Each structure stands twice: as structure tokens, then as C-alpha cells.
Amino acid sequence: MTAKSNKLNPSKYLKTPDMVCDFRELKWAGKDVEKGGMDHAYLNDLVDFPTSAERLAEYIHAETMKRIPSGIKLTVTIWETPDSWVEFTDEDL
Image 1 (cartoon, one colour):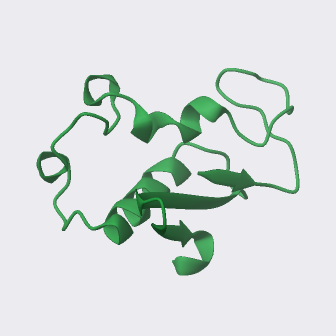
Image 2 (cartoon, one colour):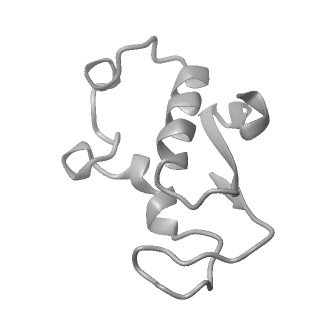
């Protein structure tokens, strides 16, 4: 996942405007399912859409945008193999 901004922002962990966004908010999907993420989970039990890489990237993008400050350009990349991946960006909305 990549985040790009033309300004620095505060976060719920740091009240001064010194970061694009907190990495904790970008890494939520990689956490174990018991901690609110998607790792070590049967994805079909977590979401109600086909679990293609494209749909997962779209879902992670939407959920992450809810967690980060507005105005950040976000790109979510899902890798299936070392040479097969999909990216979902703000322009894809």
C-alpha cells in the first residue's frame, strides 16, 4: 500500500501535523483476523463479494480510506504471484 499527500497531517496517535498518515492505519488488513485484519482468515467468511484480487484491493482501499485523513492518494496492491498483481487507486473509483 502506498499513500501520497501534498501536506502533512496529525493522527489519532500524534496530534501534530507531522506525517502523511500513520502506518498503523495502512497496515490494518495485514493483521490477524482476531486483531481486526484479514490475515489467517477464510476470506469468504469475512466479505460478501467474490474474493478476486481485484475486489479485495477495492475493499481494502475503501476500508483504509475511512481510517486515514482526507486528501491522501492511496494505492492498494495485491500480489498473487511474483509476476501477477493488481493495483486499485483513487482514480479507479
